[in-house]
Image 1: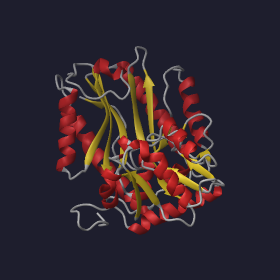
Image 2: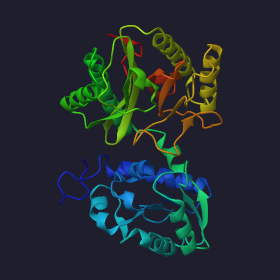
Image 3: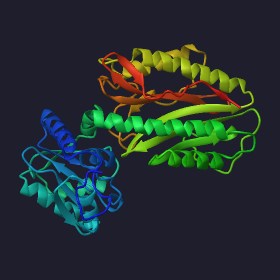
Image 4: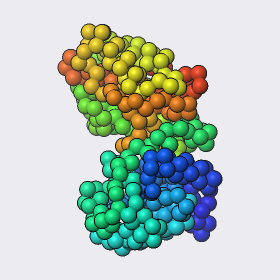
Length: 386
């Protein structure tokens, strides 16, 4: 940790202050490019990217980070959380409000002081942690302000990773691979999802990992659940197991999907083979200059031609980083014309629905380089059999 508040043990931010200042400057350049006069960042992942603060106290009310050219980055937070924000962020200018009902008045005062009360201000309107009520109250406080949806602005900057971020992603992936090995080693007839999850968590802890995010871990008939969390459900002979997990470093997560089967299961084997084939084709076309929608279109056409036109009901992939993903970040879905650029990281889970609704697939976590896509993982995507 880089110590910001030296009087608080084990506090601070994970990266040097200069890294956060670089990020903030890039976002300010994007603010100017979008013809905005200022930006209120409320999405937890975006705020953490810009400040280091993990956002734990903001569930009681919005914690906007105010960015404007020529003004210091300013965090508007609940008074109760002020020391925590100061200790875990690189922001010096912190303004507090007492209760949620005071947010609009206090935030409005800061915007007036910065001369932004009658300007064009970007808000992350499609992200978590800001409600319609928050926006209405702020507009009532500053009737001359023009609110512009800037949901995708920070994400477009955060998409391009620095070497410090890539180091964190690689460390996170190393822990993901520890968990994948544990998942495969633990599986046997009668073991439960909960037992396998506990084994994976323990393996990551022994390897020195910060945490393991278990987004999904399901066996047998429960593979019909998208993002199903582990339960005391045992696996039986000739049943599949599917997991989506990610190791974490400094908030950066590196997810993978892997599938296994105890015994044999012809449909699982067929769907996973198709998932791998589609994923290989998509990876081969990923390079700088390709639009997200082009990759998605390739994925969908391949699945349609395979004779399983209704099997694919998900996105082909998405931009990753802090908090795994964040609303407002790039998705690889129809109509997204964002161009892939060097040093983006993307997770591509190709999940396919079987005839009875079982969801089977695999994924890869990719770094876009000048020469194409490079996997962050060395773990095989093929079906693991027990």
